[in-house]
Length: 253
Length: 222
Image (cartoon, rainbow over all chains, first blue to last red; front, side):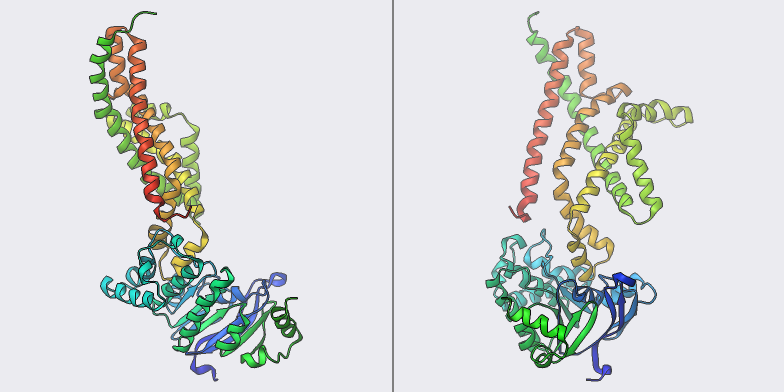
């Protein structure tokens, strides 16, 4: 893949100083319609990397380009520049971060209506279509605390989809879920990948990475230590660190 | 102990309740409403990254909390005229009470805003909201729920503190009781009667607080 047809381009992303270096010269390309799975142990910097892509963390150097928007972090970016970058993507959080004082429906319509100023009727109809697709239309009037963890996370994903972003960012979307609820969320994400959404997924679910991702990045000590198709990174890692990490995840005992 | 003059008790209840309805209650409501605006403003100033602004907020809270309400009331009503600023009793009372409630309320509102998880700000930013939108649509409504119990305390304290306005000639509940007491010389009876009316008002407020909390609880997990 040549960098020119990438929807997401990350160049030389660096965060932190000296001994507390969190990210060091990270380069990434994700083509439109592709899924990048980011794996690595906790503290490796993979979540920080994801959060740099929408300015929740501000890196010290490097550029992030999503579609037609490029932000150069060498100088501190203006709020307007960050806001334009954010408009291109949407994020699904580990702890869903749904708005507890709003109903399921209002959680989904809030962004399109308040930020994008789209008409209420249209936004609501779209939200209901989304809810129908995951079988939660009858919970539209419920508040987040009345849902199960898996339902909450699926609503979190719908809230992101409703923004019609060009890039979906997932920050360990199943790590906080009870094991039996993980499947519903992963299946929805697989369906989205098959529909052609461009996604960056920070995850510990190696099976998801192997079956759904087009590329896997192994992040270690703030660097992309290994990057390639899942068959190679997960099946036949070149680096010893990657091999150890994959083995520990597949055979915890 | 002399027998209770029930006839006087019944006859004086009218003026005292009237003092509550025309004086105490509106004074408390208007001062609390204005005080909440001050409180949110000062809380946001204190939380601001701007150092001058947060310093000003801190100083304000310090002065309000560090001086007696009665002194604040006297500064406005008896003090300002010497600077050529004469304010009538009612507006003086409202100004002093709102500034006072604003100082105490600011700390409550600030703590409530800080109690909203950081992830709520992030979720709001990620769906494209500006700082102001995130604050007004996502964070403040959640902070409101947290601040109901402590703000109810503030409100109830304010209702009782409005009795101080009698000292700057505002005709409210307590001043009415004082007038009848001076006339009839039945001090114990009249002041206990005044105390009873304050208590009834505060009971009603407690009921209101419980209802409000239950209403706001519909979106909180238990």
